[in-house]
Length: 244
Image (cartoon, rainbow, N blue to C red; front, side):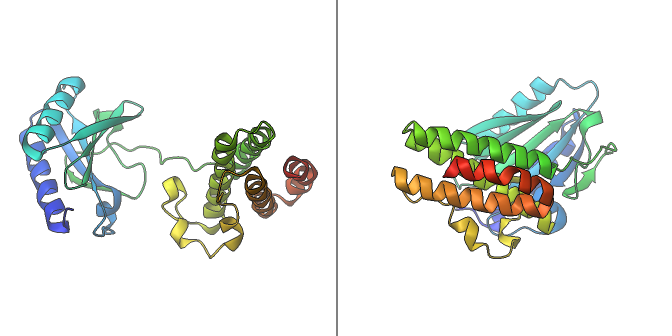
């Protein structure tokens, strides 16, 4: 297990490496460190600005070799956001190191968790917040498939779909209470919600799946009513029939 000191030492070394790499013209802290909210479990989040003439693939390859050769990376995985690639490394200490490699026009703040270390940042539009009506639509779509999965005796698929209903209900709750909605980051800030606990599937027995599904529909309808009372009225009968 890594310590906060280990994390700081490695992050500082990576920033020094970035300053020494002529192909990198900017760097920023992202994630919890950018807003002074790190704890002992936080990972390393860095964003790097590539020079206009830099070959993104070559820079990525060289930094990947660096992480394996000098810092003992065990594995990595990639995520894309537009032209920016996020390469995520796992170290033996369990420390996660996320490094974003962005062309100049994509290097900038998408939200409050961006602290420029050097270079210039572009003005970027903030990430859009999902609309409640879209989350509601996805929730009832998961509910439809939960019903059919239970009816077909596909227990594990049913569990997956019921969990999907609950996940979208929780995002609706986060939006309503004004806390972070992405990847469960604000769930600990929600008021106690015993009704949501009832949606947890305790086994893949069909009776238990039916119970959890009915509980999911209950909390979904409550959240829909908080967003749009008229829509909740329109959907209530059909959603109740789904879980009957």
